Length: 156
Ligand SMILES: [Fe+2]
Ligand SMILES: [Fe+2]
Image (tube, rainbow, N blue to C red; front, side, top):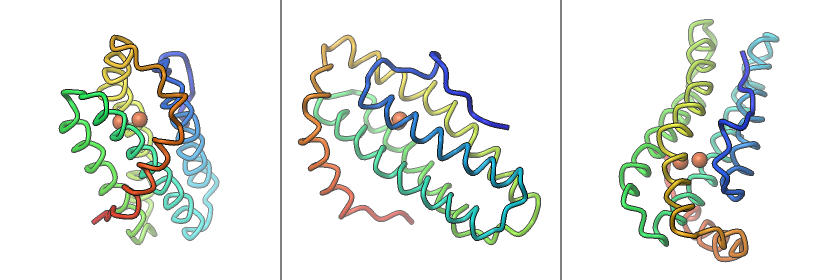
């Protein structure tokens, strides 16, 4: 089982696609570890890294949505929060049992495909329609905003 990066996952918005490619690598690292019967601490460590990167990515997208007045912001953010809480639960879970590994694999795989398809692609479509490509030149602003959001963020 692995997530294969392909054109269908590209949103055409580099700031978002770059993060997505890195997240796919993290997801595949977890799947590889599980497949190779790796130690539980390794799997949990990799899950924590995915969680960490996803928190950062969610902050980036939320900043973009807020500053462009995206009308699906609340719904999209709620889905980010739901995914973060779910991932955080897996990271804390005592994943000793085979079932829990399988569940984690299914979650990280569908997590990516579903979210890009249902939430990120419509966001990218909106950004294309609103000539928002200049965000790539506003990396500094985005990263500053993310740092502020990051410091106040609390995943339950
Ligand atoms: Fe998203
Ligand atoms: Fe995303």
